[in-house]
Image (tube, rainbow, N blue to C red):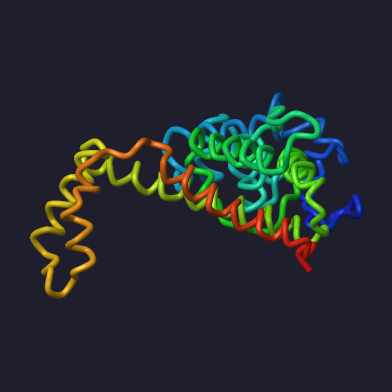
Length: 255
């Protein structure tokens, strides 16, 4: 059974300490070949194929041909498993910007790289937030963002706030993508068709006398023209970094 007391002095569960190499993983399990890595890989495979809701200790045990109780030698709770799944799917950060790159260029590269991780693994947006980054790969991504902001003059607290702001925007965009993908799967129609139908519905329901601004928007035809796929993300990220630039140029340090 995993120990939640953080025996390595980290205040982390034993399975997370094992991910950092602070604990030896069980040498002998109930079945030869059962390892924490195999458990996490099986869980990620289920999430990729069927979504996060399909992941359970019973389902993983069935995939691996073991009893559900045998998994608890390696991971103490589903919340721990989610953290390890996220770490595995995220992977190590790529070399997304050169040393000394301007902060804005570096943060844009970081945001786009993180978005790509979410797009490849949309189930990750459904993982409940249980705390700040605590696994090797997620901390490595945090490190890269801190490096990106290194020459800005912002204090450490402000850097954290900027990273939380940008990462929150990236996750919000990914959540919208996941919800849209689910809606398209349910309807069996492509995204442009969904938007055209939405515009037609609004035209029937939105009385111009009651909703004049919406009516003007519909009359402009903007909903009838398919967007460049990444337009909203590009627009939102640019506006967000415009605000960070004002903070940096103001020399307030963020305090």
